[in-house]
Picture 1 (cartoon, helix red, strand yellow):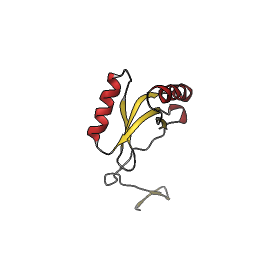
Picture 2 (picture 1 turned 90 degrees about the horizontal axis):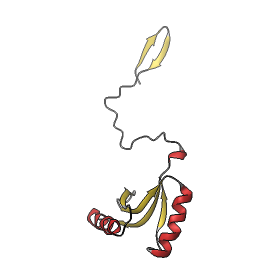
Picture 3 (picture 1 turned 30 degrees about the horizontal axis):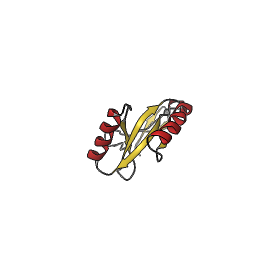
Picture 4 (picture 1 turned 45 degrees about the vertical axis):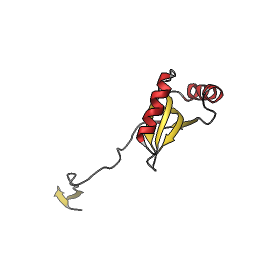
Length: 106
């Protein structure tokens, strides 16, 4: 790593123009976690979009929450800022709509 001498102190100099960041660095505290109730995961985005549309027609605030490390599109019934609220809604969704629904924390 190249250095510059400033007042007899060696300070490393890093050139950033060639550095590529593949994943954004998150400095968010745990209080800003999001909670997603997952309805299903799909390898094809078109299938995920189809489920989002179906869930929205059923009155859910559905969205594609993310893609996992295997490229699967995770479809959420809804997202929540509060774990207790998400867990309460998860129980209702499991009883009324999808017994395999689960909670994703991001």
